[in-house]
Amino acid sequence: MSLTDDLIALYRVDSQWRGLRSRVDSAQDVLRIRERKLGEVRSLHEEAESRRRQSQAHLANLEGEAADFGARIEKLRAELNASTTDKQYQAILSEMKSLQSLRDEVETSQLAEMERIETMGREVEELAEQVADRERLVEVARAECAECEAAVADRLGELERERGEAASRIPEKIMTIFDEVAEQNEGETLAPVMEVSKRHREYSCGSCHVQMPYYLVVNLHDTSSGVQQCPNCNRILYLETAETEAS
Ligand SMILES: [Zn+2]
Image (cartoon, helix red, strand yellow):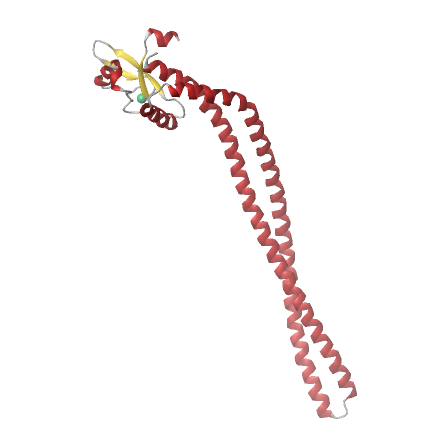
């Protein structure tokens, strides 16, 4: 078999292999993207939860302060009732008033904190729903990924073996070019040279249809000169002969 025949044999198995691989790859991409989104929503949920916990702790402190002020005020009220002089009475009363105004401030802060906690509670709930939705999406993608992998696993294994055999017949240097071009063109690695006009020596790339310099066509007839690539799309060129058309 000539190099061209070997390349065509490799191309056939390689493009099938790449087609199947890309199905698995895109299922895996979907899964990865969904897992990342889930991670983002989860950390937002955790942050909101921790802000809510901090607020709840702050509210508990404020409740403690308010209770302290309350107890002190009650104690003063008892002292006030037991006071014997007007001077004593006025002094206790003024202390009570200042404690009461401090307690009012604390109670105002308590109300504001309670409102904040309520708003945060809604936020936490919404985020929890989003997390649950995202978890479902990840599960769906994971199942689809596993299904896709299972569906193609056997065929992919076969193709990998066939591809290895076909590749072993190609010189290493040419194999490197083949892999590069295959990556660039999503597995459409080879292109036939089309004859536009033999008389005018006009030929074009069978894939991108750009006109070929004539020397490339000449080189293609000389198998010792390695492979020729389309100057436009980079694909590896081959001449369609009666054999390659028939096979
Ligand atoms: Zn081309």
